[in-house]
Image (cartoon, rainbow, N blue to C red; front, top):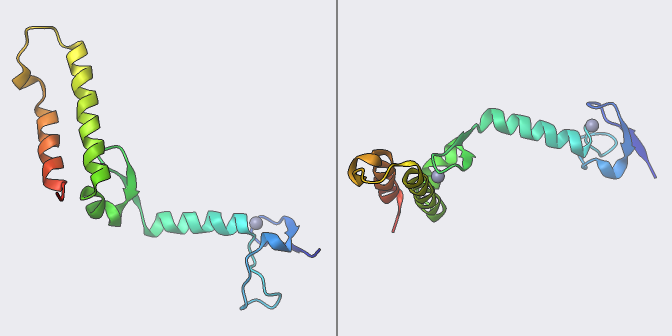
Length: 118
Ligand SMILES: [Zn+2]
Ligand SMILES: [Zn+2]
């Protein structure tokens, strides 16, 4: 068994805790797998920021346009509207007009219809 100290977290770890890197003289990365992953996630968030879609799913900003066209998005929007509608209905006193109660829901439905590729 060989060991190597990670230059980021300063922990001595088994060499199988490191990815190989032919550019280094020991053939291993300077950072352990855990640190590599942390750094990878940090840089990814920096270069590929995430946004929260109105359907509730978090997606990469560059992927949002694509996501809006997916069935997942449409179905999520549909169930979200359904959920809101049921909640509205539960809290709304009876005898009130349906028309005025859900302008948001109707708008979202229209947007979902535009986004739906089918
Ligand atoms: Zn480390
Ligand atoms: Zn969505």
